[in-house]
Image (tube, rainbow, N blue to C red; front, top):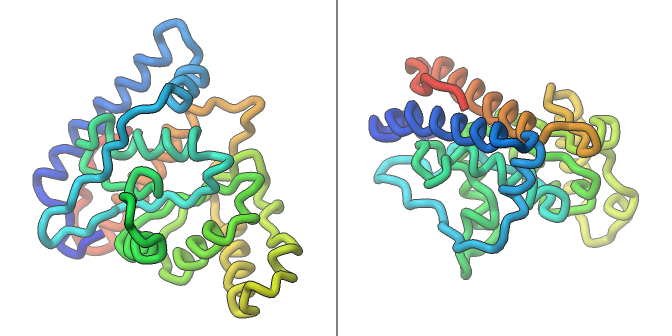
Length: 238
């Protein structure tokens, strides 16, 4: 987060839009459908026009929150739902979250955009899922987040912390430098030792998971504001 903090307009937007977002989510789950089904309906609705993140104002960081995830497992579920919850239905909450398919435009270079988003963010959400450790992109992002000493909120989605083990195919691959293998292993160990949220898709409530994750993000953002010697500027909860 920018050392100068959020602009007044962003602070006001957070106070109003996050409450509205929570009310909208509650309304969807109260109209005769369980919360899990309501959340799933949002995630699986038909194609829609992609509205990319707005440009930051002069002097502001572009992103506050980085969402690290394995697309094949979570892009259409918790990753997108959490992104929508954080930024608000129309992008007006004041929180800027990075989600690859929502935050990058055709022609953007992956390494440049992801690296900049990680440098900008104050908080990261790492969504660990069954195929997460098979992805070099996921592992590199996690390593960068750990090495940058970012605050990371883990979500263990259909896996346990003990499942975070680097696959032998990655360890034995000749395409990875030994130094990178050690970076990946270290980052996964750090994630195992960080308190997170757990979710079982067979029995869990997806809407509840999204609410808990969004609340954890705001808690950490407030702590960082206080730590940096500024008053907490996020006065509401999702």
